[in-house]
Image (tube, rainbow, N blue to C red; front, top):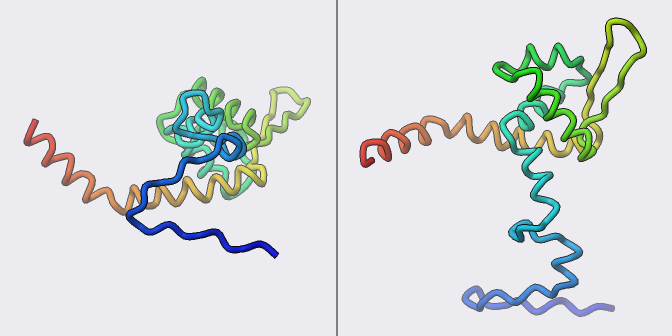
Length: 141
């Protein structure tokens, strides 16, 4: 039977995290942390929009490009490739002419999509406050 861990008082300094725990969990604040690349792919402008666009289901490249306003063919291809490499998106190419390629979220991608959609929803809901703050900041500048 394990004993409960002692709880530090709220004003206590944070305890140092053992190296083994850091290595097991990752340390996103460390420059060499591999999770930073994944965070970059997931939270980039196009990464967020691709994940959200794929939430309803499988889509072809051309449909994604039409759905995500402003994305170039090159940026969409690079974003899909990065998300595929991270295991967020599955790509299926059909041996037909002209080429037909479809993209769908993996289970991991579905989990990530829900989280970035929540962030995007929060941004859109908070936009009036954000824009008001931007206007105040611009007036000081």
